Amino acid sequence: MLFSHISDTHLGLVQYGSEERAQDVYDVFNQAIDTSIKDHVDFVIFAGDIFHVPNPNGTAIIQMANGLKRLKQNNIDTFFILGEHDISRIRTTPIPYVYHNLEFSKYIGQGIPIEYKGILLAGFDKIRKAEILQYEEKFAAIDNKVKDHSGHKILILHQGITEFNKFAGEIQSTDLPKNFTYYAMGHLHDKDVKQFSHLSGPVVYPGSIELTTSEGIKETKKGFFEVDISGKDAIPNWIELDARPQISFKTEYQDLEKTIGEISEKIVTEGKKPIVEVKIQGENIETDHIQAQIARLNSLVLRCFWRISTKQISDSSIFLDRPNVIDDEMYRLSVDALGSEQSAKFAIKELLPILATGEIKEASQLVFENFEKFKKETKS
Image (cartoon, rainbow, N blue to C red):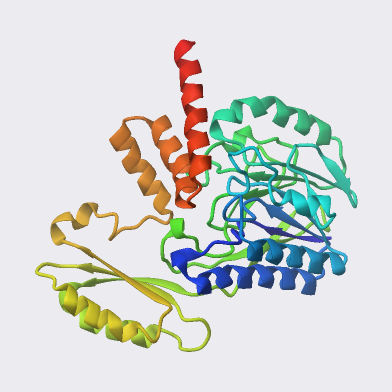
C-alpha cells in the first residue's frame, strides 16, 4: 500500500505581488497530484496550511477542489488537517471544511482515530504553544486507543518539533504519542526525516511545495513523500517537484561586473526563469552602477533583488548570512529587543504572519485574546 504525504501547499500565495509566483504554487501542487495519480497511491494526506490565508481567493479554492476531484475520479481518497494559515481568528468556518462537507476529502483534525483499509489515521489541527499542555491527556488517550491495532497507525500533526528546529519548535519528540508507525508532519518548510528510539515510526516533514517569503531566496529542493506501508515499516520515498529555481549570490562591489557575468552564464535558459538575489559588500558604493549591472539580468530572470552590506557590519549582518528560515533570525533579534521569549514568540510566530497577510481584524482579535490571557495570568 502506498500513500502521498503532502504539506504546506500555501495555495493562494502571491509572492512579491507576482501572478507568475502565484501560478508557480499551483503548478507544483498539480505536479504532486499528477504524480500521485500516476503512481497509483491508495490515499493522500494533506498535513495543514492548505491555503496561505484563511480567506483564500477563488482561484486557490478552485485549484484545491480540482485537485481533490481528480484524485477522487481516480479512486484516491484524501485526508486533511488544518494549519495556522487555514484557521481564522475570527469565528468562522474554515474554507477546507467545504471539501469535507462535499465529500471531496475527509477532515480528521479533531484527534479521533478512524480506520481506513486496515490503517488507523488520526490527526490534530495546529495546536498553539500555549495550548500544548492541554493536549498531554489527549495524546496519551489516543496512544492508548491505537496501541493494540495490528496494522499501520499514522498520526498527522502541523507542529514544529524542537529536535528539527530549535527556534520553531513547539513540542519535543518525547511529547508525541509513542505507538504510531508514521508521523506525517507539517509546518516546518524544510524536508527532514528522523527516527527516534522512543517512537514506533519515523517523524517526517515533506516541507513546503514551493519556497515562501519567510524562507528567503536559496537553492533548495521542494517536493513531497510517497510512503510505502506494504510491510511492517513505513518507508518514505522523496518525490522532487519541478519548482522555479531560486539562487542567491554574494560578491564584493569591485567584482560586481564579473559576478553578474558569471550569473548570466550559470542561468539555464530552458524552463522557468529563476529568481536571483545578489548580496553586495563593499565601500563607496554607487547604486546607479549596481542598477546598471543588475539590468543585464532582466531578460534572464523573473525577479532580481540586490542588497548592500558594508564591511564594518558584515560580521553581524543578517543580510549577508541569511539563515535558512529568516523567521529564526527575526525571533532571535526579537528576544534581544523585548527581553522575553514569550513576547518574541507571540510577536514573530503568531502576530506577524497574520499582519503579513493583511488580516487586520484577525490580528486585532489575536491581540485582544493575548491581552485577556495576560490579565488572567497576572491576577493568578
